[in-house]
Image (cartoon, rainbow, N blue to C red; front, side, top):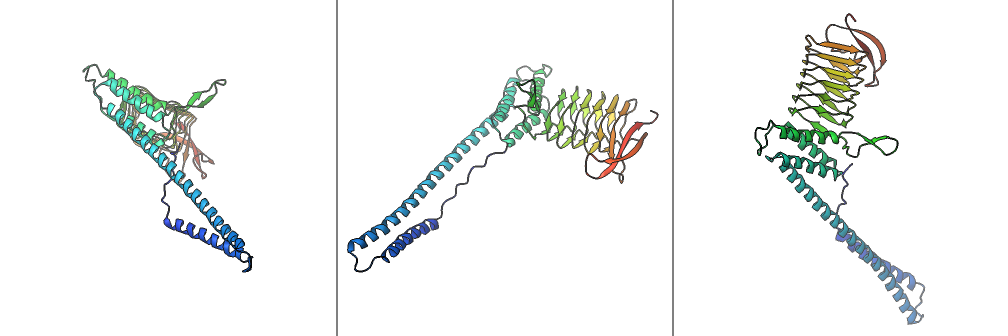
Length: 366
């Protein structure tokens, strides 16, 4: 939701007031001249007095209208000033709360850091300011990118307290990217009330216990050089921009089922426990350049754009492509790994209006 713009308070030029006074005088004189043209010199003086009274009354009425307009403008200016005052006070209060919560994240006590996370989340929930919500997500992501720290009150406790803080931070991010809620009517799926649209998630270099962004939506997702100890899942997740996992180390299994993005890069990534991608559209470009798969990789019912598997390694790994199609520019190398055969057919491209070659990947010998 866009932030509402406050009305601008503009001073009124004295030229407008002078023009209004001249107009009032001109109306009075005009009425007097018009009425006097019907009154002859032989008419009683009382008639001419009535004409003068009419002119002055008309001028006074015009002046009353001018006074009413000035009073209206004064009231309007007062209301605008009050709105600006309230807005400034609110912004100042938000800044104070934001700063206080961010300072709590620097505490040596894990409980205080947790309180800081929840304070930031509450601040974002009470505001429809998209910029503030993105700033909150940026702070949480920055905390997750920082090195592990131990609780000063209980040093050497295997970092469990810090892990709990980090898990809470991940849950906060996931909670506000999760799109699906349940209504009261026959279990109908609706948009989650906690959903914050168009978030950019940057966890570059972070050390994460696990990362499951399931049935979520965001604008971009960056996990470059991150280390994820356990499972990584992006099931049913839609990323409007780029997913970048360059140099990422996935120690657990990577599952992408029903995943969509505009561009996806796993260049230089390491998959210790393999990966599984099903019914997904990773975008117009899918990069696995210099990636290393050490167990198993399965691609099933997926649609790719231009793919790049150059210099990837998969020694002793089981690599399977089943019912996948690749959209290939006929004037550009397709980037498929050496040792795979390709059959071609002409179809409209799902990534643009130009007809490209749709190629089905089949393993040699299958």
